[in-house]
Length: 251
Image (cartoon, rainbow, N blue to C red; front, top):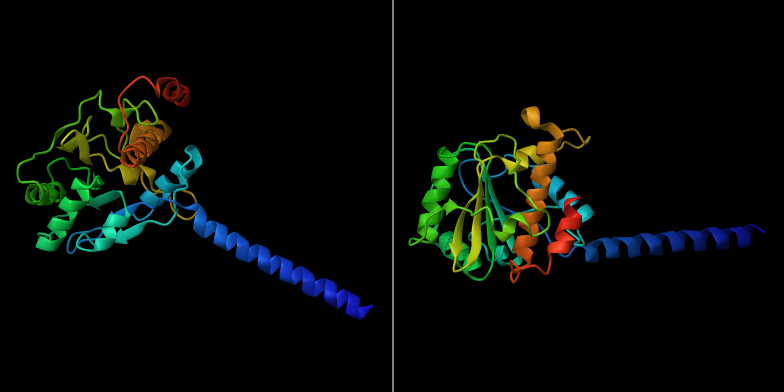
């Protein structure tokens, strides 16, 4: 009897172990997209460590994209940036110039179809972080300048119909951008998007967003999901094909 019980127990342990191993393999394989944050010297490259993680979770829940819940930190001069079609650049302080190699690789990344989202964590539209980023963008594309993204641009309807910009602070009621040919390659928000999305390990919001409250946070997440969808759908066309689906998602 004891031997029979022993065999049963051993078999159960083996099944549980195999199941756990299979689950681990499945967890590794289901994620097909990961957000990445640019690491740079000086300044403060990761002022909102919980923000993009919250966005990844929401994008995974709301869309069919299996977003990895871990956010990568990548050096702009590293070839690893080409593994990530969407790069975020956050900060709240000035920083010294990037290396020539980093500038070249960021240029190549954007020319090859990559998207860069600049999020001003200090919510200062012409503050020290903005000025540092603007300086580097002039090095990356000397013949291009940041300008307002038209309200009719497809980034505002790539998943949700968005007419508000969210963020921790309503610093600017528009996005700025830089176009490579007809594609919006660089998108800049002055409103600290990650700050509005950031939650601690207990699920509590890290930062107050003022009177807008939950509506502001929801609009921020919707814009964040749109940014992800826009970055992944490089051939997304501004036509009527997607309109019924978009209108359904808006409800």
